[in-house]
Length: 287
Image 1 (cartoon, rainbow, N blue to C red):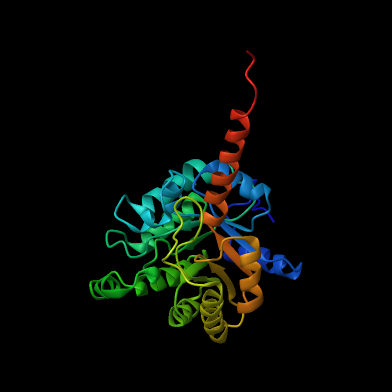
Image 2: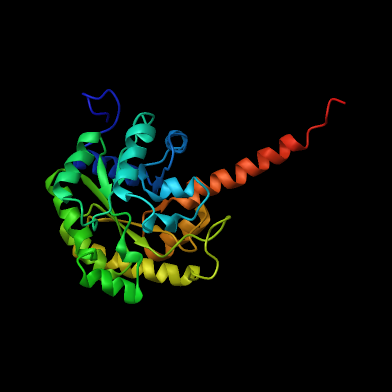
C-alpha cells in the first residue's frame, strides 16, 4: 500500500503501518523488525522480507565494529546521527518497508514537538525510543529520574507522536513501563531483556537465561495487553539471538514477533564476511 505522492512506501500513516502489521499476523506470520545502520543493510533486510526497519544511532557504532551499548553513551548526538543515517543512507534505498526513526526523547536540548515534526518531514513513518533509559538501572537510573532525564520523557514523546499520526514502536524493560507506554498510545511494545549475546562484541556474563527471558517478556506483554488488548507485543535482546530463540519466546511468552539489531545486522556481517574472506584466501596461486 505505497503512499501515492511518494511513488514508494514511505512515509506511511500510523493506520497504514498498523494495517500492514495486522495483515502479516493474519497470514500467520511473525512480525520481524530490524535495525539498519547502513543503506546496504536496509536494502537487503527489505529484500529478505522484513516488516519494519528501525534506525538507531547505535547502528553506526555497531557497523563500525563496536558494541551497540556505545549508542547509550555521550559519543555523539544520538538524534542527529539517526536522522543522518535515515536521510542519506536508508530512506533513499528502501522502496516499500516502513522506516522508523530512533529518538532520544530525554535529550534536554531538544523540543520534542519540534524534533518530531522534523522526523515526520524527513519521511519516517514512525518513532522508536532509542536511546532508552529503560535499560539503565541502579543509582545512575535514579539520578537520571531525579534530574529531568526520566523514562517519563520517553512516554511523553510517544503521546506527542500519536498526535502527529506517527506510528510508535517502543522499548520497555518492566511491566509498569509497558503500561505507561500503552496508555500513551504506543502501537507496538518491545520487551527488552538486555544487550544481545554472541558474536565479537556481544555480552557473555551480563545476560539472563532463556527461561528467565521468557518470564520477563511474558510479564511485560501481559501487562501491555491488559492495558490495551490491541497492542502488538514483540521481544528483543539478551539471549534471544537466533530465529529458533525468537520462536521459543513467541511460544512461551505470547509475543508475536521479534526485533533484531545485532542479531540480524551485526551477526550477518560477522559470519558471512569472515567466511567469504577465508574462501578467497584459500584459492590457489597462479604460480
